[in-house]
Image (cartoon, rainbow, N blue to C red; front, side):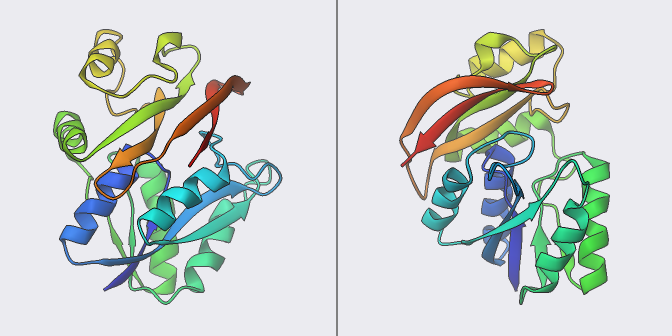
Length: 211
């Protein structure tokens, strides 16, 4: 069954990809939300070219969903994109974000395809344990008011998880406390060149190139 995956570049989308492959899905397209003006992902502000580098190494075709967060038109843009693809299913890396799940399920339902959520309802501890066996990621974005500055640019590992736990934060980042970028896994290894940190709204992010 041909499928697209909604790709963020982080640990959850990678683990969802692996589980979908194990279940026999042919993940052909990687969709990702991009602000049309900045050419960066919404939320974590990763450069578009870094996301494309990951997907191409996975042999998945990158498909940007261009929109404007200010205009609030990403749902319409997602619908237009999904409708144009010859797929039978959409793969999501959501764990417990009902609002986003409902949005994507609504889009998939309108075009008559299934929505697959391999991580939905899984224990956060199990998700991280499984990811750590498959890949490595760095923290590229933190919520300024709740996540320690020391988290930014740090490898996501057991020590990082313990820091989150002591702060009472979601260890998988489902509360928006942090976001990650996978730089090493079973399929590829990318070099990360960090440039600087910058502030966008409630978040502090790392700007970087990869290759």
